Length: 133
Image (cartoon, rainbow, N blue to C red; front, side, top):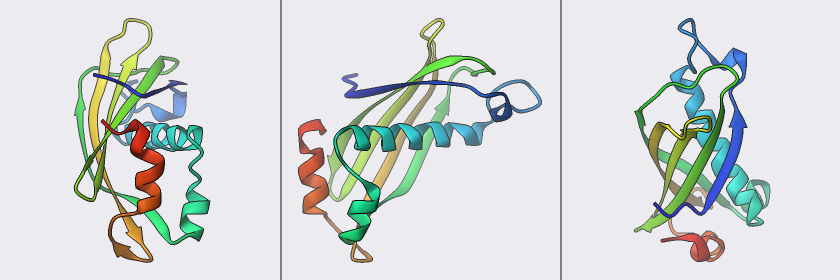
């Protein structure tokens, strides 16, 4: 894998379920936060895009759960991105920092609504082009 971005995070107590592991729904928060931080790091503002009529949205998510994270665990959330037709596919993996074990493997398909209609965004293509594999 050629990751283009990584973000370190820490599991908080309230993200865990009765078994003491991260509740599955919280992984989507981790994935979304990583994508937003990546975009922010390359100067992309969702508010600015929206003002220009461009709204990137999630179309589909696939998550394979590999190993649990627990309260207090530090982890690395990594990603790379591909363009397929009008979709941007973010491949995102999360690794437990203590032993490097993969916690989840995910792919997130996103599309752009341009002025409320599904379509290509030249602006989004332009800012992502240096990072697309």
